[in-house]
Image 1 (spheres, one colour):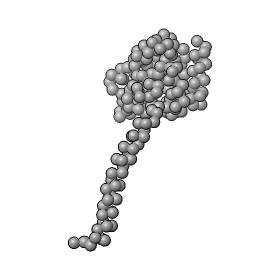
Image 2 (cartoon, one colour):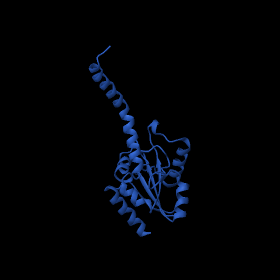
Image 3 (tube, helix red, strand yellow):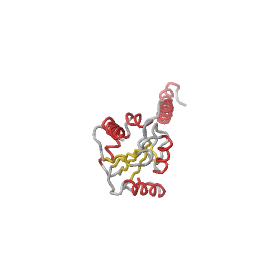
Image 4 (cartoon, helix red, strand yellow):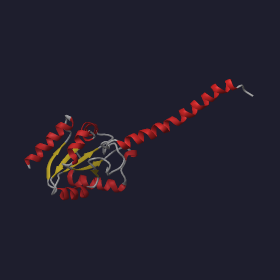
Length: 185
């Protein structure tokens, strides 16, 4: 039998190992609890797996018909974005500098209906067959030339107001561009 003084350090080491192995789960649980209490963060369509992002303050739709119906119902223009999220560098820059930024999300929330159609090349990023059909139908209607990135602004009744590629300058520059187009209509 071990003397009591020798058991103390062994017990401390065993208890320490137990706490260390339990710590990541506790840390994850604390992080989940903390994030549940904070405001939802903008979710980017290029980074996120779901095709319809309803948890985001400004939801990106992946069905052009649904976006146009929502635009009519709310009398808001539709911003349709075509991207190649895993191969098109300007698309990736657009996403990082504009669409995933809280400033753009706040701007778009009550002003625009957002629709996103992604055409990734890597097999692991491919959309479902049903989503691919929706993407191709939207491209056949609004992006016949296959431009990437392409942002198309539609009026609530479906008329094309403007088309543009990458706009440098972050959310402020893109918002200024959108405001200019919307004021001209």
